[in-house]
Length: 184
Image (cartoon, rainbow, N blue to C red; front, top):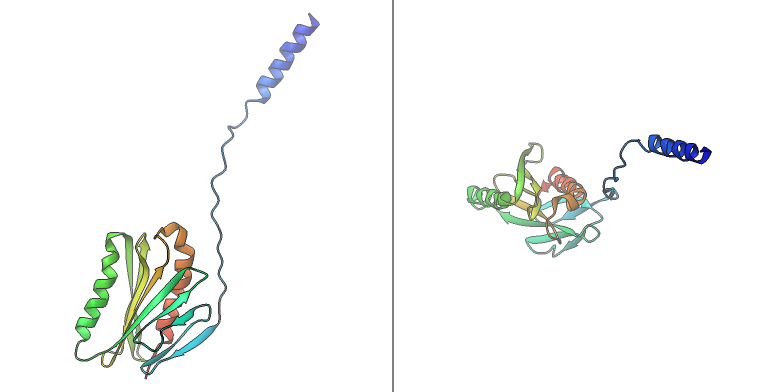
């Protein structure tokens, strides 16, 4: 009889102690990617100069179209310079059209005007959110002689969640280019 009471007591303790909160699996973790601040270097061309991140490698600087490659981030900023020859409206229209070609895959495109009266740099920065091919684009001009466009691309299939930290980092570099741009 004593064994019966022991078994019943054991089952009762087991039953009451097992009624706790339900165990849930832990959510998947996200990688925390941090990139070095980088030091500024200056690019000088016959038409303009600007500062850029020293983590980038400059390719084809002697042509009117050149690239700032970021091998560690598997991305690049493609820059194209064109002189203004009574075709400013056409150049601006082409730059805007290029930015809005990504609207099909983008969740949102944020436009940010840029005006620096002191250096005579006027333009637009486009931040593209979503799985678009380019995560940022810009154009800058002095409205009379110079016109510069730039686009940020990654060497990977666009998956916004995966490239987001690198995209934010390189968007800051694009803004630095615009902010330090000086025409000659």
